[in-house]
Structure formats: structure tokens, C-alpha cells
Length: 138
Figure 1: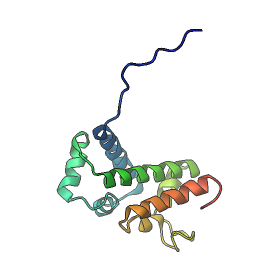
Figure 2: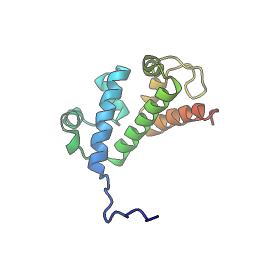
Figure 3: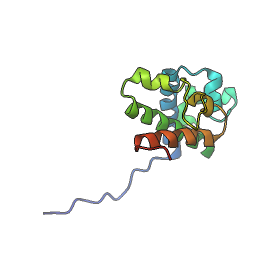
Figure 4: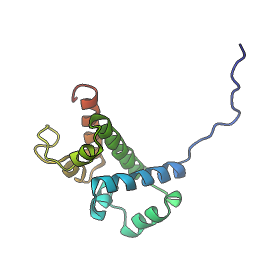
């Protein structure tokens, strides 16, 4: 049995490609969740509108801050968890706007929590969903 060849160069995904992929995915999530432009801006950390529209027009040219990349990562994780937990896409997409009695939400929706403006709020919703997927909220 011969060994597999080891590539001499690894294909690194640079921050520009990650940013472009994240922004394209966020655009689809925003459409699925029915987000307004103001809601999208808040979820992304309040970039200037002109910057936001430039990102949408040319995501491959976007130079995103670490904060914005972290926000995108959390939003993609939230979306993925919802698709796993609620296989009906319409139910998964509607969940973010429904009132929720779970402790992190206090009767408000997950979107209300995410729109509080802090990256920690996005992370909390993601952790909550990851906990539900794993059998318990930690």
C-alpha cells in the first residue's frame, strides 16, 4: 500500500474569500428571515449604509473587521442550527421572530435579542441553539 501524496501547497482561504462567502450567505439568510435593511445593519454591527451597499454589490472586495466576521459566523451558525432543529425551512425561518419563553429571551423573540446590538447577543442565541441541539441548554 502506497502513501497518499502530500500536497506541497495548501490552499488557504484568505479573509477576503471568507468575507465574500459570509456576505453572500448573510444575504440569503436576510431574505429568508425577512430582515429589513435596518435590521441587517444592526446585526452586522452598524456599518455605514454606503459600506453595506458596497459589500452587497461587490462582496469579493469587502474588507471586514474581526467583529463583523464574528457576527457573520454567529449568524450562519444560528441559521444552520435552526435548519437542523426545524427541518421545515419555513418553520426554521419563522422561529427567529416568534416570542420565546426560554430564559435567554424572556418572552421576546430571538431576533429581538440579536438586535440588541452586541456580538455577545448573537453568540448567546447561537449557544442556546447549540445547547438545544445537544440535548440541553447550558
